[in-house]
Length: 148
Ligand code: RB5
Image 1 (cartoon, rainbow, N blue to C red):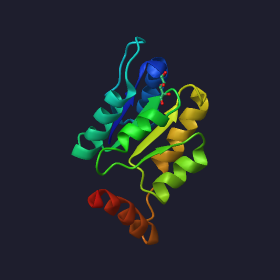
Image 2 (image 1 turned 120 degrees about the vertical axis):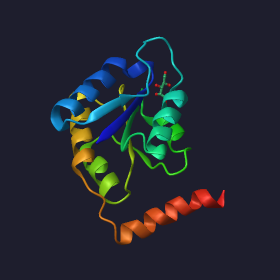
Image 3 (image 1 turned 90 degrees about the vertical axis):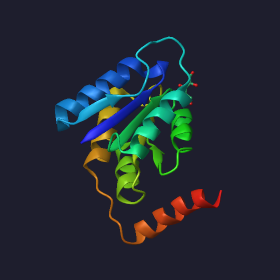
Image 4 (image 1 turned 180 degrees about the vertical axis):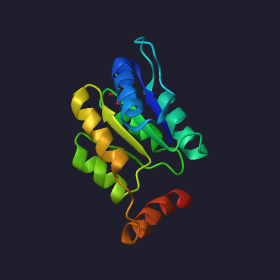
């Protein structure tokens, strides 16, 4: 399993802690698509990069982090095939996999403490898409892209 991770300047150390947590806990490879500098960095660049990596199958799933998680999630969701969910707690993260088949998880380094962020990641990585009626609804979401 490969996880892509993207971030802006607000989340450099935070990204490193999340990447380490994923490696240590799951043994997954983590591929970095974000900045490693605290110089101002435009989050759409990292969002597009991690989203394209998920879309192209370079990685299986993605994690996207900016100050609030909002800007980078908006960028991710502009890439066809991406369902990026911004989560501030584990319940929504788990349900975003089970019901929405989210393929990128976003959160805000200025909003969510690092230990809570690890719990959010754990809830998301261990949940499975349930299919069934949820597949129909996800298909409806993705069909919106084709109408644009
Ligand atoms: C950067 O200041 C901040 O705007 C960015 O990290 C993010 O929160 C945007 O949504």
